[in-house]
Length: 381
Image 1 (cartoon, rainbow, N blue to C red):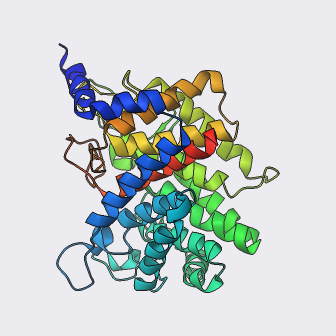
Image 2 (tube, rainbow, N blue to C red; image 1 turned 135 degrees about the vertical axis):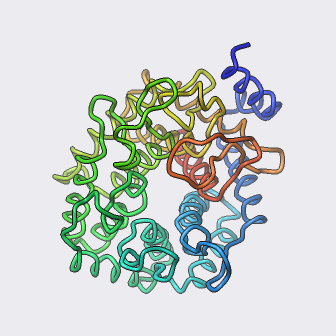
């Protein structure tokens, strides 16, 4: 058996009965809720973070780190459909916000000049803005607005590719832009959208390969190649971009003059990504060299599935072309969930394609899974 497909065969064997069950009940609302609850509850039972002053890298592992912020965003989506359990999840999320004082990180082990600008540190602002909306409390939003205002008023004129003061890596297009579009939606102040649009398009013009319809992770990958000679396009990196586009589009009214660019980019990227989906429904750590990274990669797959489900629900993507891809992707994601709810095959923190195993998991992968499952629930509902 060809080695890459041996990996996929083992992937579905590991999924076992869960995969068969997903095939039979893939889009049943009760089944979707049951699977999301299992994954959410497992992650809550295993949740941990590093406290300030502890060894490690708070940028990646603190309570307000981007890794956990993605989990909170997915958990907040799940809470919307958790029926009788919604209050339990909202209480858990509110307690997270209370512990972090509804403030964005400032003290972490990075170049000091980046600490107020870094897009990853803005990610949790999306969660704070959502909680302010859920609990109808603007006090939960004020620190996020203050950080965004400071950045707008104090942005240096360095080159976009020079450092992480700017959105100089593609992951940033998930972490930061929707903070500004959400602020514009809340305040009705166009300055946030204008700033977001300017920064996003700077990154787009620098990192987007219009021939491949994919984003380089950052400038260091422009001339690098995979073992097969193809350009290096990271699966999760491009997943971050299309999921970030979803979060922007959710905040833009149909008549917004900003909307056409983001809709067109969304459609263009999804067309390319669906063409790169493997027969099992997954995407891989490397989009153009699956043979070198044959294992499924669930964080990329979940982020892309989230985008597919949203595109179908909002009729941005035609059913006849994209529905089967979404269903296959959902089946594949379900197959990566263990009996107790652990999501496997999540590539660890990184910046480029790496090997992954069924034992690997991470909070951001779970957050992406919850976002995808909730969006599918809304689609079928």
